[in-house]
Image (cartoon, rainbow, N blue to C red):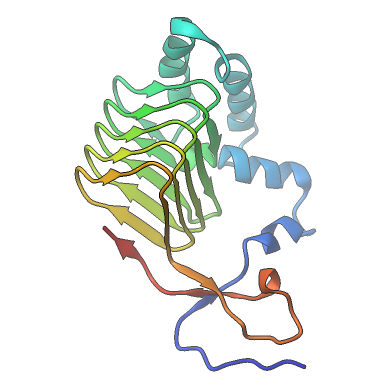
Length: 200
């Protein structure tokens, strides 16, 4: 039996709904999710650059990624260092300032038509960290240092000011959580309540 509650805050659909959307072809879904663009040219460029550069070891790998990744990202400043195995989803919606360092095996995931991830100048993202937004925005201010194995996630907006230190293994989420609107649905199928942007 349905038992909807009165909600004052905006509700957004679960992220899993986009995966189940059969009105969009799998190729278009891939392009929007991973490349961040429906352009065939952007798709081909992304595939070639990540194929030949993502796992390239040693100094030659850092040099290739510094030179070639600016072709697939939204913006990329000077002297950016990107480690091996870094995963970029929605690459065209990711913007990196000058002197940014992203360590090995990190994930920057900007899925959704309204998503964006912006890293200011001199930001350090340590290895195995995930920065993820779905139809929201993450803005990390100048000089921030994010420790290893962290998760920063939002479906609305998450902002870090200047020179903020995030310790290793931190889970920082901004935006909202699943509601309990319907008694006959599992939590994963419940709508998400938008609790607004978070700023640190």
